[in-house]
Structure formats: C-alpha cells, structure tokens
Length: 119
Image (cartoon, rainbow, N blue to C red):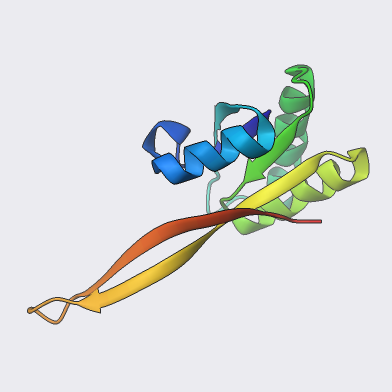
C-alpha cells in the first residue's frame, strides 16, 4: 500500500501515476501533508515529524510504503524516522516540459515518470 503524504491528493494525479502506484504498491491511501509554519523552529518541525510518524505507524497499513514530498526539513526528519524503522519511502519523478507563450510567460508541464526510493 502506498501512503501518499503530499499536498497533492491522488485524486488529482494523472492516470499514469495512479496506474504505476497500483501496479507497484497495490493501492493508494491519501494523508494530508501537515501545515508547517515557515517561522517554526527546528524543534517544532522535529516534533511535528515525530507526531506524524506515530500517526502513520498507528494506521497499521500492511506492506506500507510512503510517498513523501513537501517542506524539506520536515521531510528530512520524517524520512530519517522511516529509514530507522525500515519503512520504504518514495518521491515521484517527473519530466518538465517548458515553453514560452506569446506574452513571454514561461509555462511548465510536469509529466510523471516513476516513483524513486529515497534509500
């Protein structure tokens, strides 16, 4: 099971990303990424990572893998906890296709490629 801990619920994913998650992990469960105050101290971020880790462990999902993307210091702390517990963690990779419109504005489209393990 892939726990999607990002600001992007799987309902908004491309069909290719959904299909890859189901094929690779068996299914998807969404968990909202916590709001992290940009003025939070490192200790507050560490505490939030620990709380989130406990919530995830309490979900008791079988064959758990976690898709984690978001605020970097929080992700780093949370990924460290996952690694210590042997919980597989993934990011999603994408190909960026950029263009410039007639007004000179840069447009980017992101096309899902794969899930990449963090460790």
